[in-house]
Structures are given as C-alpha cells and as structure tokens.
Image 1 (cartoon, rainbow, N blue to C red):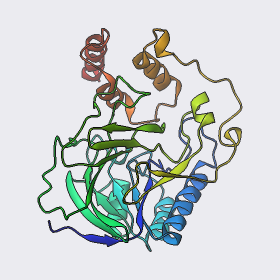
Image 2: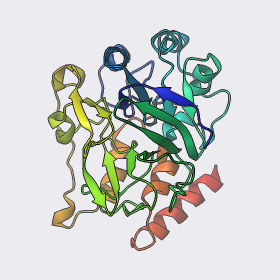
Image 3: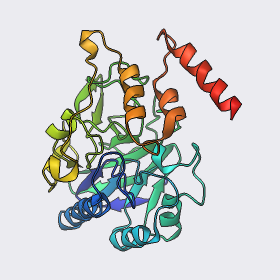
Image 4: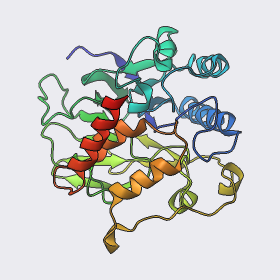
Length: 316
C-alpha cells in the first residue's frame, strides 16, 4: 500500500473548530480571536509533543466569504506543521467542495492537507508502532469493511469520519455503530457533544467532541473544550483540556431556550426545528441540510415536513 508516510509520536485530533470572521449564533463578538487562540494552542501542543495534528471536519463555520485577515492568520498558524483536515459539511458550499470554498484556499496555499476523498490517506509511524489512517469525509460512506492486504504486521487501521452516528446521546442518528472488519478505530467529528467510546466487536467508535462551544445551552455550559491524542496501544483517546473562558464571558447572560427531553416523550427532531428557528438565519448549514440529516422514514412528521419544504423551494 503506497501511502504518504508521516513520523510522529501520535495523532492530535482537533474536532470542528468552526472558525469564522464574525460570531455565529449567540456567541459574543470576540469569538474569532478566541477560536484562533484555541487552534494555536492545539498546534503548539502538537509541536511540543511531536504529534501530527488532524482536524476532524468543519474547519470553518461558513464555507465561503470568510475575511482575508482570518485566512492570513490561519496560513501563518498552519504553515510550519501543515496539518491534515477532514472535509466537513460546513466546509462545503451547497454540499460541494469548490475552489471558492475557504478551505480550498488554504489547500492551494500549501498550508493544509485536505482529506477530501474516501479511502486510505496516509500512514503514521511512531516509536510504539504504526497505523494506516483512512477517511470518510462528509457526503461519503463509511466502509463496510477494509481489506488489510498491504497493512503491515501489527499496524492499526483508523478511519476518520464526519457523520451522524448513533452514539448514546443520539440513538436516532442514521449511522449505526457496528463492527467493521479490518478497521480498529472510527474517529468521528461532526457531533459536537463528546460521547463515550463504543466497542463493537474489533472496532472502537470514538466521538471526542469539538473544541469550541457554539450552542447556547445548559449542556454547552457544562462542557470543557478539549483536544484528543491517539497513540498505538490505547483503548481510549487521551483527553487534553484546553484553556477556555467562563461560559458567560463568551455567551450573553440570558434565559436558556426550552429543551425537549426525549425520555419524556419529546421529539429531538422538533426540538431541532425550534432551535433552527431560534438561532440566526445564517447559523449552521441551513434548513435543507438539517432536514436531510434528521428526517427519518419511520417518523410520522417526516413526509409532511419534506413535502412542505419542497413546496416552499418550488415557490421560490
């Protein structure tokens, strides 16, 4: 298997930074500087600990028209280490990765290596062993199996994903965690709330959670942003908490929106629609993406909601 070979002591996973030139949602105006500082801390950690930094998708909050000053600062941050970055749904415009997407600018500048295709991407060689690292970016399928022909004796196989996986807090998500022959680890971005590692046969499914608090909610208030380290032989990712400000220094002091509790018969789908309406129009990947991610065949309101959406779009 002829793959680019990287040498380091391990991998540093940085999930979903959602960089933006202006504050999304309910975040206060200093958001751009605060997230840049977090990314800088992660890259300093990678350099000091000889780790290869890998971003797990959604480098940007909005895919295009990010300010030049932000792109220049990111170029300066990334130039020395040239990290890898998985493509997330927020990195694409209308579900497509094009040359005018901001993350493509960083790739063209030679400061970022994009994981934009499904399949084996690179090999990491560490003092404790090596691993083949594959990717399934947003919009591509997680493989059902992986042929280990060409994998060296004792090597692990890791697959980096950006998908809606049914971790414990999200039992309704479409991708069901299961054993994938030939793959030892699935490392997932996209889902911002950290989830416990799931062991499914010989495959571990991990969702470390993102490094920035975007949603104004009680759960976000309880969460501590962190990066995560993988080295050969670990059963769990090593969590490294990041410096962060108190919750009400990055969000306004105000009432929390009501949150449905699924155990009491509430619908997370309807709760999501409420949140989409409550947040700014520009927030997230938009109504269409939300519906695609959350409509389910067995859900009573799904067919009606999708039909209404199509009628509205047709009228436009």
